[in-house]
Length: 144
Image (cartoon, rainbow, N blue to C red; front, side):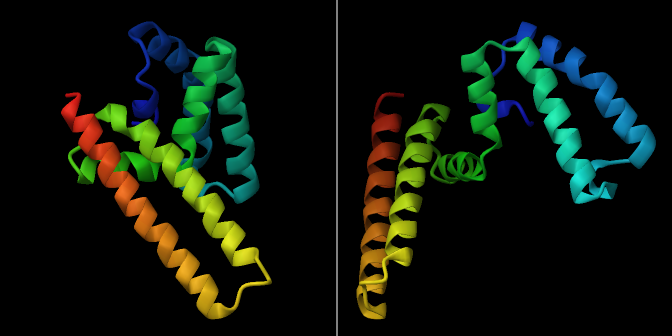
């Protein structure tokens, strides 16, 4: 599931599995699961795991792996599924979501806007996002 967004080749999957299997097994023996770890232990475990994966993937494939861990990417995957869009729509949805999230943060931190102006700007971003999302889904489905 963790690798679903990057669509690893069978060879990449095997390499990743071999690279992380020993660490995952040790974690399970010591803690039973990630949820039993302290935040510091979990962070160290994730860093070691990512380092092992980085060792076996090319730099561009490792970047693709890191992207799949981004919560906004996971949100884009869910959005694509909800709209019945093909997997090729995920990256455009992700990029649009990231851009809109940046716009939202700029609006929220702009001290020159009144509360009403801020709300109007945020509503505009939301409406733009819905329009763009529909366009992405329509284009992805048309190319299907």
